[in-house]
Length: 144
Ligand code: DQA
Image 1: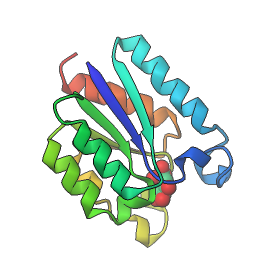
Image 2 (image 1 turned 45 degrees about the horizontal axis):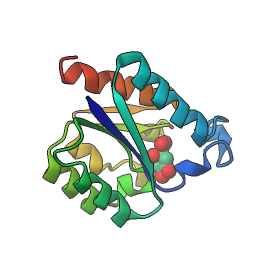
Image 3 (image 1 turned 90 degrees about the horizontal axis):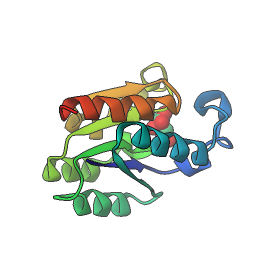
Image 4 (image 1 turned 45 degrees about the vertical axis):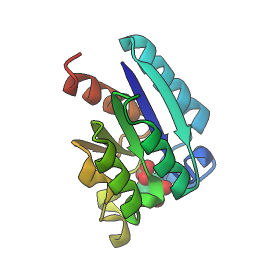
């Protein structure tokens, strides 16, 4: 089984960006957590981060026929990108949405999630631990 973990803009700045909201752990710690979770469950994990919407769309398209599941934190593109939503719908790969912060308790402009409409599950407010939970949710969904 192979899962793709996609992170959108500024997630590479974890640990530096607004630690009161996103925590003190950095992007490397997030990568390590995903790798370790994959090892624990015998799942191959590929991590991808981009600050560019089109690059994220390209990566989702390339996952077609290759990946069994996707964990995605589209970051700010969550609230703006119909292109990412359409790409997720196009490939029809089971997908879990993750947000490090509790988006539902934040600004009004964060209350819409386009990508979330293509996901069977959403995890918010768990810090980077949410990625482990997302991998577990995908694994269960796929009956493993
Ligand atoms: C985020 C929440 C988004 O609103 C924000 O733009 C981010 C990160 C989160 O993980 O909590 O960049 O997706």
